[in-house]
Image (cartoon, rainbow, N blue to C red; front, side, top):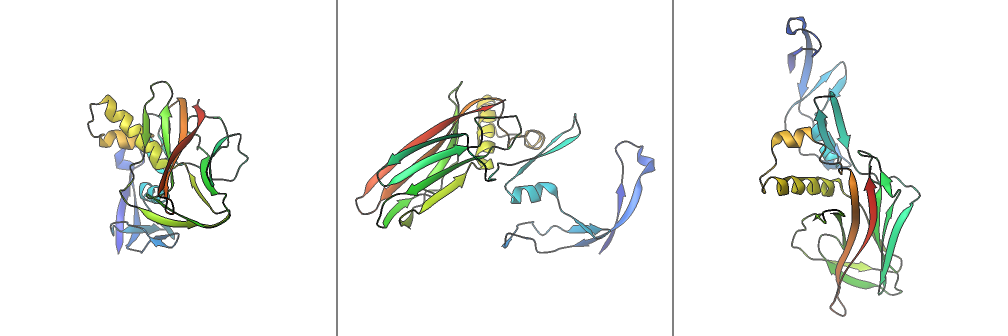
Length: 241
């Protein structure tokens, strides 16, 4: 299908707009082999280039978008999982498991992607079965000044996993946790009201505000053979400048 669009530059008068012809089509979009939910809205091509809504594509890649009208700047924010030497870390042994958390830096500039990861390593010799929720470890963020803490809600499900010698579960700090932290802070300041569309679109909710934080990871699981419950945490201090 051919469609004519009016392109109106923001720096010119509306009567100096340009008209272009584009082709609408409805492709199946797959990201890493999985179908992406695009609500079957048409995309368009222009000069052999396909245009996809940035907000949709960013969210599919676990990133967040925001627009600053004052500075005419579009932001795409996400956490990083690029292999780097860690400069800040902590660990704790609990029976045959070792929980550790790592950060590439003790401080980050505002808007800089956070490169923080955690691992649960099995150090035993024979295989073991554990039961846990959606994952055996999860992150949380705590403001050291106000002690406000936020974590992601976990579905009430239980999974069983077998761990053999040197098996490990690894995870990176999810951008969704930073978004949840900022949204709950907003709700706390606005008497638990739902955030407005304007707030969601025009604020970088995937970026931690400047301040001092404790980034923690919690291990929570049950050892099936003994029925023993394990629940322990470790934390590292991180500064956003």
